[in-house]
Image (tube, rainbow, N blue to C red):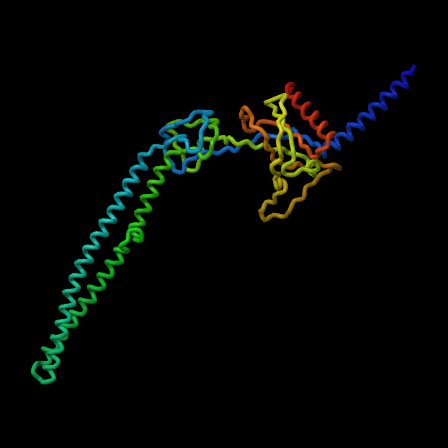
Amino acid sequence: MMTPEQKFARWVRVSIASFLLMFVYFIIADIWIPLTPDSTVMRVVTPVSPRVSGYVAKVYVHNNSQVKKGDLLYELDPTPFINKVEAAQIALEQAKLSNQQLDAQIAAAQANLKTAQLTARNDRVTYDRYQRLSTMQNVSQSDLDKVRTTWQTSEQSVSALNASIHNLQIQRGERDNHRNVTIQKYQNALEEAQLNLGWTKIRAEEDGTVSNLQLSPGLFANAGTAVMAVVNDHTDIVADFREKSLRHTKTGTDAAVVFDALPGKVFSAKVTSSDAGILAGQEAVNGQLSQPDTSTRWVRDAQRMRIHVALDETLEQTLPTGARATVQLYNSDGPFARFFSGAQIHLVSLLHYVY
């Protein structure tokens, strides 16, 4: 028979041995079969904002509507945008009519130019003849001066008409409307007005679910200000582990995932990537000197790094973004590691029935 002192001593030894065994297990497990409850289901949330400002005329979806890329979500009152399109069309037609008027003015000026050139040529011939007669003293000097003045005036008329035609041609621009600056200016204004009109219909950019819808007709929506959110269907599972737990983790490492919302179920997965860093490692460029962290603790908290995990199978139900999960990594393919890690993650999945 063991005395009470001996029984107590035995229990002390068993407790110490159990503690040491658990301590060793947790050290080894944290390296080869690490597990973290700091895991979250992330789905990209796309804020939906109009590209133009206006009053909401119609809303085509309701809260939790499933939408596909290109589906119409809501529409702004198109009336002012239709008016702008019509005004731009009128301005473009006016520009084309102005060019036609310039074409007519150019044609008239060119006809006048031909007449002025003929007149100048005739006046030059007359001047040359008077010069010959003047050498023979058959005409007076005053008559010669009048003929010279007439010829010079005719030449100046030709120059003035050439300058006028050149000015009209500059105003007219290129004959090809695709290269004509004035036409292109009004064409671009028309296309911008049509584009803005098209933007009054706001469509889904990705497949997803409309969430927390508070939009209603009559609301004034500002361009660039989100009035709706669409939660993407693609699921990304992020898990935060201590740095040392990821020493043997790489892309493609096997993993298992347990979701709080689906207790008792373990899903196989793989590591798809790891983040290049965290916010604590980002230096703010603010022109100030560095400020080292100060701590009075001998042992600081372990830094956590984020990895991304993808399931090997598709879930029967889509989990909401922000859903919590637990991720188990298989950094070792050994049978013992697989056994203990499997037991570990299955135990966690059962515990989710309780909490």
